[in-house]
Image (cartoon, rainbow, N blue to C red; front, top):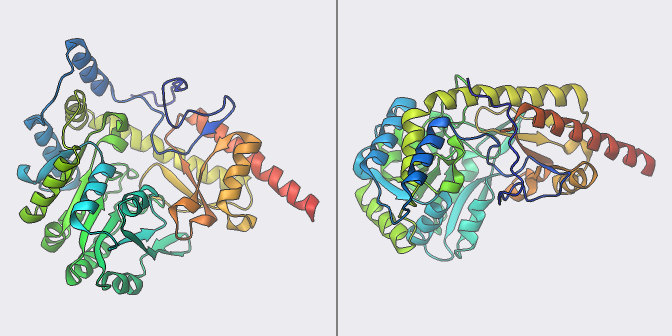
Amino acid sequence: MINFDEVTDRRGTNSSKWDVLENELPLSTADMDFKAAPEIIEALSKRVKHGIFGYSDVSEEWQRSLISWWKRRHHFEIKKEWLMFCTGVIPAISSSVRKITTPAEKIVVLTPVYNIFFNSILNNGRVALECPLIEKDGDYEIDFEDLEKKLADPQTTMMILCNPHNPIGKIWSREELRRIGELCERYHVVVLSDEIHCDLTDPHEEYIPYGTVSESCLQNSIICVAPSKTFNLAGLQSAAIIVANEGLRNRINRAINTDEVAEPNAFAMDATVAAFDRSEYWLDELRAYIFENKQRVREYIRREIKGLKVLDSKATYLLWIDCRELDIDSDTLAKYLREKTGLILSSGKIYRGDGFHYLRMNTAYPRSMIDDALKRLKTGIEMLEKETEEIK
């Protein structure tokens, strides 16, 4: 059994999330506060002891471990020639945007969605075309009428899909993915599917790889995957791009090589192989632990904190918290909580769509830290309510 209750001090380690004040508790940036699986640490230690860290090539073991994992875990038969190494999912997205689209063209995203997508679109001179998701009774649905209208725009050439969806934790159904694929094929729009959260589903829940939905989806897509979220390896810069269509694959291969993001560092291969080949048991224990954390947060907020509601989530370690009953936008609320309690949550405003009504909470922490965060959250909301009453 892995001891996920162990607290590791990350201050002073150049952690972007933990570069905060002494009294602050960041449940924001989407990495986990758990040590990597022992097998991964062992593989990296062995590599360190070798002592030479020169240029590295993509290994056949890396390819084999990915192919085996997606076949075993997700029923996705990937051919070796479809795989390309990249230093990260976001570098892969940015390179794809630059190669597949041209400046001023439109790229569709379903909002609220991971905010860095907008960087990849806007920083490269393209236009982000939002298709807002519709929230109904705590669940989100795609407005397919609106989606078709935006895909039919002659200036739309790409859709970036988040599967499963960050920040709402939604696992898209096969039917939803099929309809997206049919519309994109009809209007000649390439789908880039970011599947970085695919392994972090609740126990007994499975995501559906976009490439398994239909031959059309497979041939008209760029699929990005990585061990980084699953095994907490973001700093090792290891990701994969899956492209079955040979013509499209050649263009993406040229893009990532032009941008110099197609070469692994000295640790990327060994860590990825150790993760996919020898750390499956660790992931299953992790998923169970995170599921209990999410349930703990839901129950505490339901019982102890008025004005907040946690939406259902079947994937990711992120929770999407509705704060509209407090009559305050999430940006203001997030700043207030940080100032008054030291609790740092992500404001939903940065994810666009209806995100200004929501906070995003990362639950991939030892349980004592989750309990600390919940107490701070309760204190902050009570302070806010008291101040509001005094003003009235």
